Image (cartoon, rainbow, N blue to C red):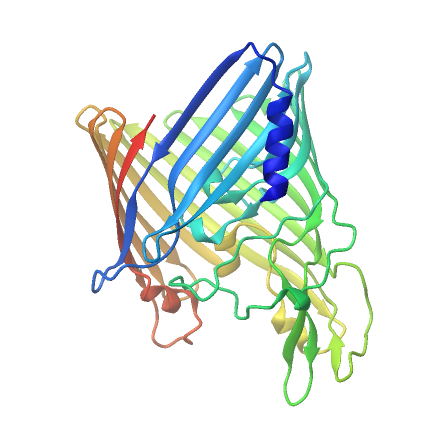
Length: 419
């Protein structure tokens, strides 16, 4: 937190006295409750947010913050989500500071979008709301129909995970800091090129970094394999995404090919009864999305989300079963193949919005059914109601993701003031 405050002070100190300033934000008290008994689910939420931008000639300073709050013990946490400086030269944009990247053309689930880590407390939120900013520098260059982008991240930023909370998606273990190996050569970098071709936008990308989720690296062998040390693998991501427009239809496709390997050492190393396990893999994640907006005030979106492991290799036979993807869109990591269908409709001069959705596992039984209502009785004030019901499969093990989610079936009540 001290480093974040120091960086913000440095940015503010560079601001000239004259210029244009804009700000916006929300105040959003809300409660999350179990569907079966209306018992509160004690998780933090963003009670308030504030975004500020200051423009002076070809420069802009951007900062966004949030106040996280928890009802049960009335605890709070201030978070500086972004604070960066942008320069707009004739060729494009140059930015430096703490920022959140958003790559890819699909909605919400983006396997090519790996520069910014995920905050699992907000996993079911949309867009950058579930991302974590990191200190970085980026350049965008506009060249005719091309947009070229490069990014450099000097320090690895892992996902913010949930432990011992009223939330079912948690790592199987909670290692302490001494059990997690330091990342060697933590610098990360990526590049992306996008262009237009007829009614289509196409993009290719490359990212070289480290997994956002830790994985087991050292196992105690006797009496049975048990992880005792963890690390972050090196991963390269080769991405392709595109969007096509055809009348009232929009097609979005996004594919990422991952090549992952241990993060610094190799071979079999003895740890006094424990051994280092070298797990390497190549896997693919994809999202295919179809949208239809031909009905008045009514939109339909369908997404096919998938994950496929091409190869998993280990220096210890039989340990391939411990591999889990440490990068990519989280839902592809939980489900090998899933279909999500959502609808949205606005009524009463757009004051009322209704959004039903269904997420189904296509390989085993498992569903999520959701319904959101957003009503704005007056300008800047919205009443938000949502309901999510999860259905698992009793014939599958308890750790099956939808079996874990069944007890997380919930409804949410919130009131949002925007300014």
